[in-house]
Length: 165
Image (cartoon, rainbow, N blue to C red; front, side, top):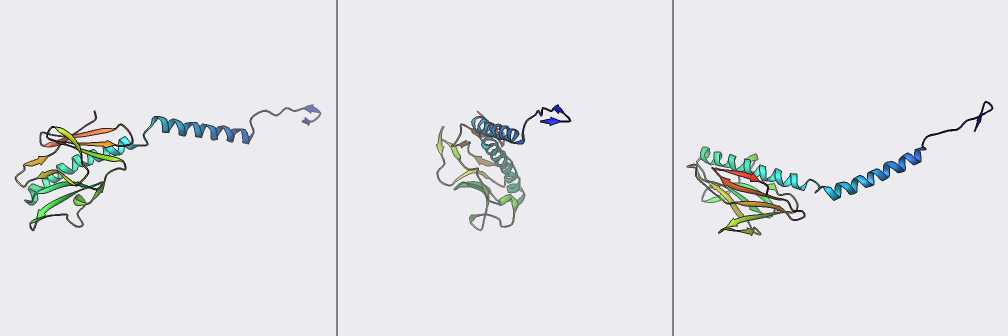
């Protein structure tokens, strides 16, 4: 291009070239994340295990304070607390401690029974806390069916301990 009688040469990238490069970087980054990461599954499984640990600790205290047995139950992809009153296990309405919580998608529950692990396909009681402070707890593993993530909850010294093998 001529400007004031001299040859003027423009340099740099066009907007189209920059946009193509940005799109290519985005596509490559997406593939890298999918190849390297698990989409946050491990963190969600660990958060669930930590929530169960805290919930069992609170349930043990609640059983002593209310003088009623409390049980942590897993059923159909959910877990919740129940208390024993009026000759049956019941949940408390409008109590955040007793609300129904969902397991992350793809989570499998395995429990320790007779020295071996069994997949929990039906409802089961993970722990029962009695008013005198005693309890009955099972060892449990949370496994992600889409990845190799496994998180174990082991009953030790009156509390659950989260372990990642």
